[in-house]
Amino acid sequence: MIQLGQEVKHMTSGLEGIAVARYTFITASPQILVQPKVSETNTFISAAVMEEGELIVIGDGVIPQMMK
Image (cartoon, rainbow, N blue to C red):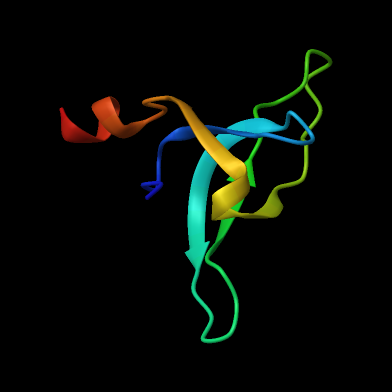
């Protein structure tokens, strides 16, 4: 189960970012809102909703910072 604040990667598209929200539905798999980092040109990249089963955890993200 992905925890909010973890750094995740979408297995198909390769999109990487921080898990910032979780959506739970009665008839569908859990969805995670992924917020990518700012691009090299300092432009904001829109967040994307992805199925939890298609994401892998690649880092702690902001979790260690929140626990301090």
